[in-house]
Amino acid sequence: MGFSLDKVVPWGRSFEEYVEMFNLSDDDLKCHILGCGDGPASFNASLTQRGGNIVSIDPIYNFNTIQIKNRITETYDVVIEQLRKNKDDYIWDTIPSVEELGKTRMSAMELFLSDYEANRNERYIAGELPILPFENGAFDLALSSHFLFLYSEHLSAEFHVLALQEMLRVANEVRVFPIVTLNGTTSPHLNAVIESFENQKLKVAICEVDYEFQRGANQMLVITQ
Image (cartoon, rainbow, N blue to C red; front, side, top):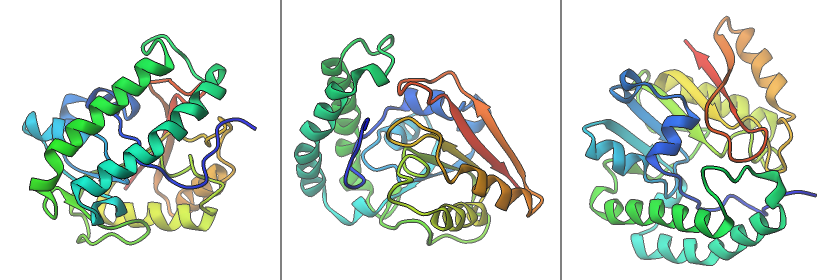
């Protein structure tokens, strides 16, 4: 069966992971960035500390710090247990154990929680794909981490196309990581998505990145205006 979840869960990744997942250059980090579905990741907080310009959007931002913290606590053990059951599906070199992964993820989420409340409605906007509350071309770069494609069993091909179309409305370039599902297989929606945007004469590429934790998840989709 492999790794499975009934619904999207709050699971935050670090600044360093975002840089590797999306192959972000120094010039990329100077862009006006939109993070779609960032959840409790610490990328927003860390990039802002470095002088970056970023907005994150996620339905979880409808809730306050205590509510989000409680949700993280509720789902943490579920995710860790799934990781233990499917340990062979992951590469344990940078992160040596499930326990160490838990510490790393909690550290990122705690950094998010410390930054969140004071910056709600400014850098953390409540909302969700496929409708974004931003003007056309408001951002240089839009990122989607561990949402699109990963939850292919939960989200249709049509949803993926609509979501990516909306991200391209507000940003000049879109990057999505990973392009595999929760169980590690290539998303069944990938070909339909590529075909849809190639038919619109947009530049579509699958790019290999240095980051690989889930085995086989070392590629991102890039769509450019």
